[in-house]
Amino acid sequence: MAPSIAPIAERPDHPATVEQRTIQQIPLDQRHGRARDLFTLWFGANLTMLTIATGALCTSIFHLSLAASLFAIVFGNLFGAIFMALHAAQGPHLGVPQMIQTRGQFGARGALAVIAFVAIMDVGFFASNLVLSGQTLHRALPGTTPDMAVAAVALIGTLATIFGHDLIHSFTRAMSWVCGLAIAACFAWILWRNPLPAAAVTPLAIGPLLGAISTSVLWQIAYAPYVSDYSRYLPKETGTRSAFWASYWGCALGSIAPMALGALLGSLFPTQDISESLAAATGRLAYFAIPALTLSIAAASAISLYCAVLSTIAIIQTFAPAWQAGSAVRTSLSVALAGLAVAMALFAGPHFMESYTNFLLLLLYVMVPWTAINLVDYYLIRHGDYDVASFLAADGGIYGKYNVPALSCYGIGILVQLPFVSNGLYSGPMARLLNGADLSWIAGLVVVGPLYYAVMRAKQSPAKSPTDRVRDQKHMG
Image: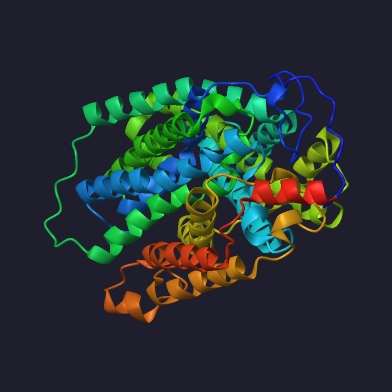
């Protein structure tokens, strides 16, 4: 076992102070907050123009009727949020970021590939948010340019990341009220001033419907790698149920409402981009709604950037286990990764919606097997019984540097999805037989979860739990 690392001295965090901790376990006397804080975090984080644009994919890209789009949005988000919220419940119990906890399944170095991918994914989400903010804000505020909007949203999101956990919670809490009012006002205005589109008379295409459902499921699963980052400060007695339901309903409802608005806009204005559609549908209300929903992009960007920074720190710490990164490191990495996202946003191509759709689907293929492994390990194999000190040990402690069974199951999980893949980049043979229906995420969940459970049960010693083995090691030492 690696020697114990002295904790960072700090006072409890507050929105007006810079968070001092990064990937270290949060001590019990530093825990604060309530489960309902998770509801406003995920509710406010989803009330953005990007969520609206994702809902518009149902009618503008998948060409579904409004009724079919609403079904896909509601079903996909309610189902996908189950996995997202199960990850959230791990935070109060373990007190560490999600990607650090992943070392308990994959090993200290085996987790590197997953952590690196998550960092790349989050920078990509940040860039996607910035692209859309640049496209929308300048239309609502005369005199602004897309580049000015990108810079403004990036600055606000980066500052929130630098201040850290508590300010991000406060930011999204405010956005819950401001953007919730904006979404409600947009619905009321549009339904009052615009007749609903006529119901489609063409047969329902199963492939596009499943594609829209997959997009909504992915929207939720994409949060899974960093849900615990925002629940790890909660008191341990918060419990699994409270953290689960607060995160579940916050993220599900916060996603369904703006996605439904996007689907409605896509059905009314199928040939326009989302910002033009919203402006055309809401008239003068757009001068309030678009800036509010664009400002919330900064909150969502901060959530993504915060995870990217913690993941980057975790990668470096793997090779320097005694290193304790604090607020100065998080500040430097926040600025560097935000700069990378800004560069990506400024050079984004003209076909943003199509590229964004393919980006979401690619995330699905690599995050589904990780989600299955993490949840099966936590809830069915170890029942939340982990040795947290081993997460930060140079040799991985009782989890070792590599967990070959987990890595093998992860690789198999990606491979079994390929025949079912259907997107603008590639369509597998099973997807073609199913008329373009993308069932890859179902294949990944159904295969990887049971496979990992069987493999780990066969490998696991029935005699002792992780904490028992650590206790024995200390006694022998």
